[in-house]
Image 1 (cartoon, rainbow, N blue to C red):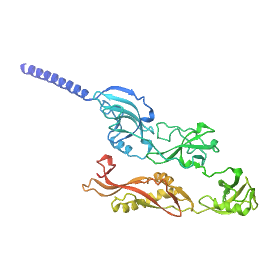
Image 2: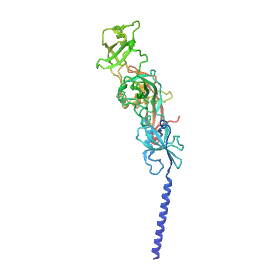
Image 3: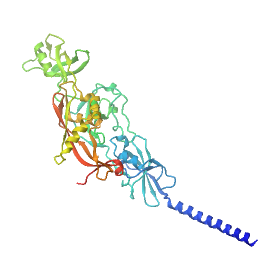
Length: 431
């Protein structure tokens, strides 16, 4: 009897003790989790709340230290987004949360809308730190010499935007098609590049239709000739592709010196040959008669054969190690990179076509050749690779032709790539 009673008391005490321990553990666990003490909507100008990830913190459904927080984008994914060359992976911050521990979390959404959640932002509200940093999604650029333009190929592609796509959250098109505005004269008032991609955009204003005002991809515009004269004061040359009968372009040219009322057929041929669009060769005139001042004449042209531009990569910085040029050459001439160049018709223009350095820059960005990293030999600790980063020196004042060799300059930086460091991103050597 006493033995059974003793055992019962012992088991009862054990159960009470276990319950007490369990209660203490549960309480301790609850206390170990942070909780929100304030959660406010950010009121500042939305365009000042564009941020980029740093790669040092993950994104969660709740503040990361709060109970029930789940991962939206891991630290590894955040690192990849931080190093992306795609503006779709900039973010907009729109709420600030403070926890009882004094930590600040921002609620953010990617420009593409793909990622949304909370990310650690340091200890001071409105001062980005931790997993986010302020971002300039656009970089100012120079206006073209001539600021009058028209739409080069009116249609539903490359229309005007309130802000270039993904440079602001929910950026919207101003119009769905530029066809109704094909003949409108546009005034270029601002110029900027998308910071990550390097693509050039112009802000245009349409006096005839102000609803068209907005940002448009630079290549979608036809910049007016700075020396344009009124059609009534000269001769209009209408250039036509002889093989297809399609219009190529038109240009008003001044009357030859010494003429006032008309030009002879021979003079018209001379004017045509002096103003042939790049990439074409003269064939014949559409008329053998003289042309009166203010009149027009058809000029038939033959398109020159296309040819891949002859571009040579060059290491720009004088302090680069000797092997950098060899590594750059090898990367440039790789099958993948050469195929990317061949797929873009821009790099295979008709012979004689002249292009601007800014155009080369934009198209190299499309081919992922604006900035790239080349891994070489293993590091001394065998945990990664010695690597070289090459960044294009924007050739703003360069002009290139398929008949000449164009040097493409890159600034070289030596460093390493290790999966265990900076999420596998390139890390420059200490200088």
